[in-house]
Image (cartoon, rainbow over all chains, first blue to last red; front, side):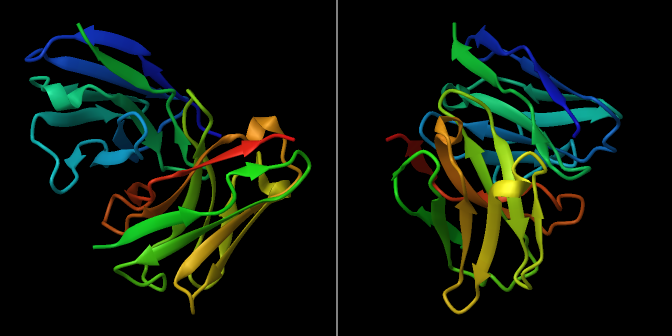
Length: 107
Length: 122
């Protein structure tokens, strides 16, 4: 299985801050990477796929980049509704695997 | 707009079988999508369990393969999960999810059910 390692596991930020979350795969995944947002008691929501493509309806303050084994999710200006836990997921090979999550909390 | 809804017992006894169903509404389970089960233990991360296509083809997580069966009922527009020989470690929120068919997104989960909590306890 491909192991996905996210960092940091949690962070505190203020509204308006630029936030960056990283995800590292144990082997190259050719941009087959998705990012999800999960709020307490809710299902994950797809934000980006193919490392950098925005899912329909997702605000443009969310962006993704990376290649090979290293990928990044950036929130350009954190909004109150963005406080949540974020997960990366590789779909390069079966089984698809998720990172351990990054909890974004209010400073 | 496709929606997914999980249903099934919220409490299962140890060594028993967990059985859940995911009803698909607003679309057909016979579309080009694969349909998956994903679980999340309390306070922990996400684990993919397995997937099914409307033809009945399946793929399972090797870590669970010996205990998992996923099936489809096209007449009812739903798919199901059975997990046998459960222990407390199988306590989790279980989600059904649809895999995207968008180019370059095949394998990402674009629609999720609300999730159902299953507790394994005597």
